[in-house]
Figure 1 (cartoon, rainbow, N blue to C red):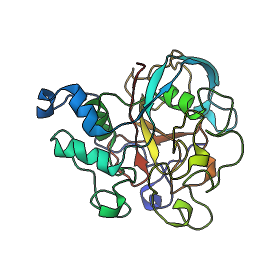
Figure 2 (spheres, rainbow, N blue to C red):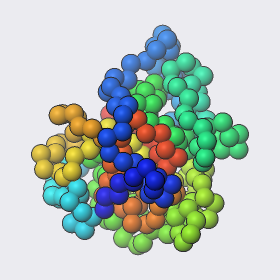
Figure 3 (tube, rainbow, N blue to C red):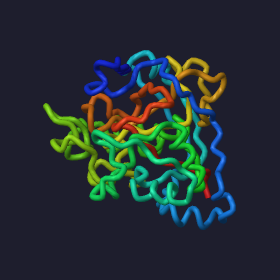
Length: 278
């Protein structure tokens, strides 16, 4: 299901409108912090890496609209992914190191809110997510890697836990009139262990949607089948995955795709890094 918000509806709908300015370059070069050994940067980041063993799976869905079609078999190599969404505390370490720039602040942005250090960092754009990921010794996951991981390593499931409907027992989503399971905000990462994947990745459905590496295209026609990101030719928008605290179960499906201009810094958007298998 594709949801594209127009400006007047941005408080209600999750995905910003097309054509916004601010397309960043794909470069993720480190600044003065390059002088620090990579191992030291990774310790500061505090990422808990989870190995996702490779395999083949059917990517896409027949009931989520044309951009999730055609379903096709994709082969993914073994890789590692952060167990949790990047937290405010983790992102602050990169800002303090002089590499990352500060997220936006404001309504439901977690940056600068002391009691939200363990909430996911949000209000960051695609480039900020990519720069942190490089600083932490990784990169943004490809869309195929993300979906493979969200399906508990490629299982034929609608959600990370199986086919049971997404509710607030398993995911930080909107139920009824309020987002965030009644809190109208994000929750601390990994607050819903019943929604974890079999590999113990948490918040792969809900809390904040996640930037991935790929450009957004309106279908999978011509998409890579080797698990790599779809980066050429360049497009206008990026992909976000996983639903969020602002929207309901329909967008928490592992195959659901969001379309977001890369310069957007929204309170429903965060990320987690990946890296090659070790």
